[in-house]
Image 1: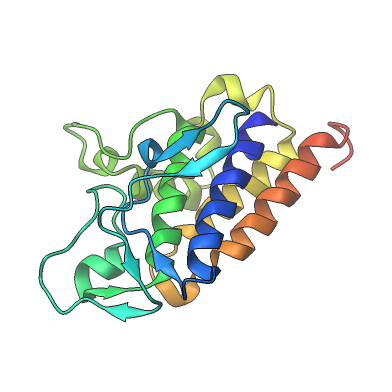
Image 2: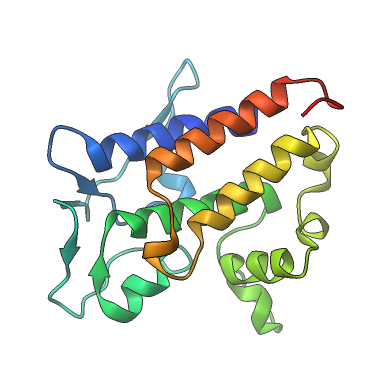
Amino acid sequence: MILVYEFMGRAKGLNYLHTGSAGGIIHRDVKSINFLLDEQLVAKVADFCISKLGLPDVEHSANIKGTFGYLDPEYFQSLQLTDKSDVYSFGVVLLEVLCVRPAVISSNRREEVNLAEWGMLWLRNGQLEKIIDPMLVDTINPSSLRKFVETAEKCLRPSGRERSIMRDMLYDLEYALQLQLSPMNGG
């Protein structure tokens, strides 16, 4: 339950950036360490050093900004920066917590290096539960877990056009929380 609730706060923060009165802000460096919790455990989005005002935008420079492992592959290849780039990065953060591992690791097995690629490989094979933190599997309602995983998958779709907006991710996480709060055999 706490897992889903914390991510709803993070999704709310990103949704506000994308849709707020400033005309939209793309964070450009969404990663787990850029979310802070206050004394009441309310999530706050932090580190706006490379944020960009306005949606959507085209980067006119070959100077890609962001953190390896969280970067939207479409942004990396086309230099097209949109709010969907933040959505992709948010999906990596969701997988980070679900699998209890960083976005990038050093490994001799190339498919394990990048968490987003590795997680989606396991998901496509119908075996994502094999890489999820075992302590989470026994504490999360299976319906809530499925919704959480589905939300991460929506974020990590290869094309920005196929990804949902942050408002939809927020709705999905709120639904996952409701599923978690329902009886385990209900869902």
